[in-house]
Image (tube, rainbow, N blue to C red):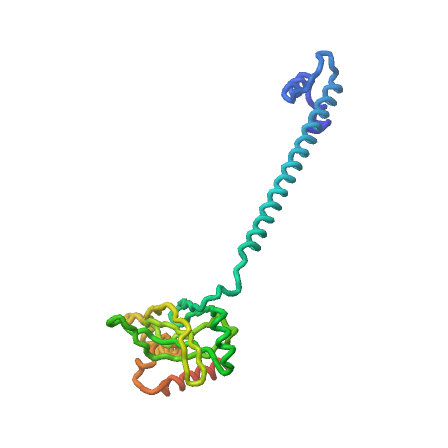
Amino acid sequence: MTKEKLQELTLEALQELANREDVSFTPEITREALIELILEEEEDDKSESEKANSEAMRVKERKFENVKGEAVSRLTEYELPDSYNETKITFLLRDPLWAFAYWDIKESHIEKIESLGEASLILRVYQVDEEGKGTRAEAQPFEIPVKLTDRKWYINLPKTGLKYRLKLILRSGTHKEVLCESNTVESPAISLNPAADYVSDEQFRTMLAVSGILDPDDSSEAGGIPQRIISLLDNQYLQIQG
């Protein structure tokens, strides 16, 4: 409270305020002297409050610095290694048409590959047929050449609704050696609702066929992309460019 506000109060009001603020005064004290005592008490309270807040902030800052330092220490302590010295490949499904593979190769295999000179690595992607008699048959395989320094790869899956698996293969001349085999991923099947209006839209079906979502084998024309699709794409391209 300012001095001007205090001067507006009566002596009785000032005495009541002084009692609430624990200000000691004698009954004979003048009005002006009592105002000065109240102002001094308020200034002391303000100084103590600022000091307490300042100390609390310093404690909080030190605590934050300690926590931050411990976090940095933990990150440094548990830093992941570049390799776990094992030959292993993992296969993950990103969406129905794309998958992601990452792998590691142990030092003994790396030394063997480097000693062969003409050796190379390939990823073999293949469909997994239904299990029968404890065996898995490879169907529709295709191969992707990779470098010895590669450790990950995105793979476009030919069809949806099928199971896929990978093999990391060492190839030297005519010799091939499987270094490791991945887990199996299953791509969910994508189908159109036959009752939907867009199913009869020729342009929409064409876009799905080219994107790979709709199987081109469903078309009435066999052998690659039907000519009507190519024609439609040409017209659409000209419209976009124009």
